[in-house]
Length: 155
Image (cartoon, rainbow, N blue to C red; front, side, top):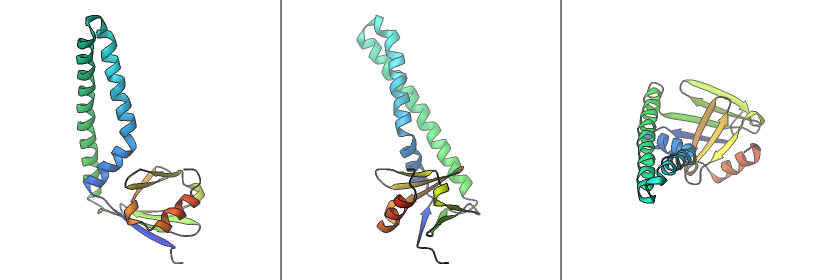
């Protein structure tokens, strides 16, 4: 049986970092704001200016920590994928979805997928059991994107 659509995703460090950032940015920014507030409130007794300095320092420390972890995590993930190549291949049939990646394959019916997440800019991420499968929107025909939005109802 021939697939209705096919797509590939090329893993590059830049693509991997963009995906991770698109998923985690709201959490990271929220934690950074909370760190700022937690450093700000106890220092109010010294004055607003001192409290702002402490708040900015707290936010800066968290930001540096997050960026280091972000770069280390995505670099490590990319190096692990070098063993298997840099490409995910996807095939879309009327009743199921197939993915070929890291020397493995996955075949799953659409209703068993957890959903899809679309970033505002570049990515479409298919969520399966213990799997996160990214695609670049620009590499997908509009018909495929519409097909997936209709097939995967729990987005």
